[in-house]
Image (cartoon, rainbow, N blue to C red; front, side, top):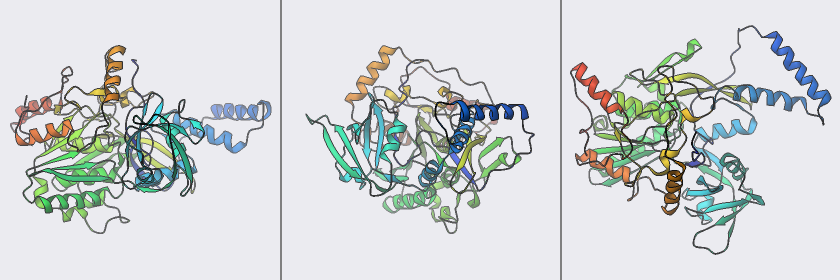
Length: 492
């Protein structure tokens, strides 16, 4: 496979590193009724005994057994994992929208951690970190040689503990050394603003437990400012996923009551489920009292919509995009999504450890499998007017080792990327371009979404034509004799 830019992309320090799943939590592991493979267990016991007697130094029983469990689960697919005490705690904190850390969104560039954006009012923000800063050392440890995940873990820690960052900044001749005190950070799951009279932007950065309630507040604030809303852009770009109820609730806000949002299918009977646009599927007794969607204005069900997605849109964000696309409620715009259509169930093993296990695949209301394929936009639009930049070179689910296959069709062949020279050209171009601010004045895809809502021409992708869902929709409409799409048609 061509050399892909594996570490480029947004990962908030409070977000579980990598692509977050649409997760479900269960109190305890289920007992298996399957017979145990005695011969293989005998071999495992023999290897355990050999390590205890012959290895160069003594190894604790607990370490050996824990690593055996971890390796067994990790061998299944990229999203199944054993969660020790620290990892389990971080996972729960991430779904609740809070974590202990510095408060920066980061990527990787030339082996260093690049600051994409400091979170407002966070310790990093107050310490003066800027977008574009390169972190070269974490305390006394050089960043070169660390993976992004390893660097993120080092920046996390206990509240009120210090970490010293060495920073290379373009405007400075010497390294900038900053000491920051870690604090609890609360991640803002939903953002919004009226971008111009009649049109609003609503962004979901990650699906957390408070997401549905936060979205309701944001939409009501939009209508308070702009009662005669003509169009809404739902921004799911670089949204790595999160908890399933959040995805159902966001979808249900724009769809008729009681319609199917997503279905799952796996080995266990309880993994064969269909989730509907109903209160019990998206509310949490710890967060909501009553139905939060009942507070929304009726007009939100009919306002014209565009949903923005890209390669960083995964899992729960793909559920939302797929549902709104299947019901022709919104025009999906951007680039093909990540393709993580699998369910991770958290099964506790003890009070502070658990297994995150892939238990099912997700399907859109029309029965399309998301896994290893993703959602193909109705309108393919690049990240910038000059092209899709590094977004087109990011890894997708189908590129991951041991990824779960798509059971509805054969996995798409590894995408053909340009030659190494072209990748280097794009990488060099990206270095010169300041980090993109979603929802900002220079957000090209947002501008194209607004054009579409207004019936104006849209600048489509310069990449080779890919069969899009739009074409399938048109064919389906011809067969079914209807054509009540939410969009205004392709504009060129």
